[in-house]
Length: 134
Image (cartoon, rainbow, N blue to C red; front, side, top):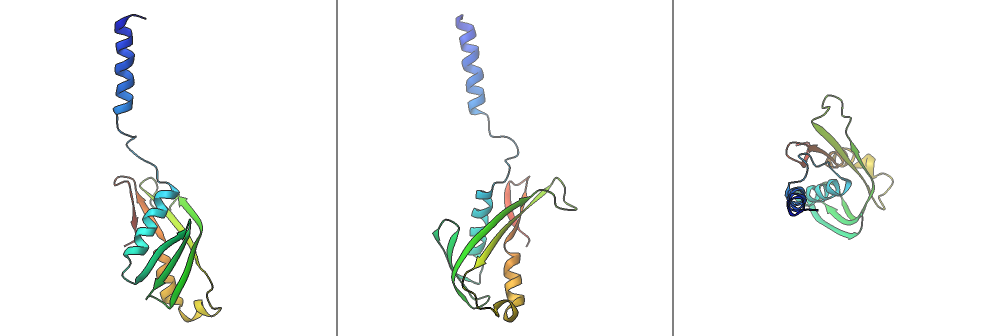
């Protein structure tokens, strides 16, 4: 190979290493969980939110009487939201509050369902970040 050809390969290789990531970075389960964790910590009703082990947290809230462990059961990223095709992606974190009394959802149905709504986030492709419904 001649010298100019080697230089061309080096320039092209350097170009591809220095160009920015694609214009749209797809949301991941990891980025969704990180955004969800931030949302839980920043909720004014959250008193304690600490990761104990992967997908398990110590959680205490004033929203309803709970001071115990929370575990993520499932994470879903849904790109097929009716009415928002192409611009917004929905992410759902499905947590379980461990060791709840049987009558918990009956006694605290409104406050619990209000908290559940905080477990749904929306990925804005233009901003490349997860947002709450608020």
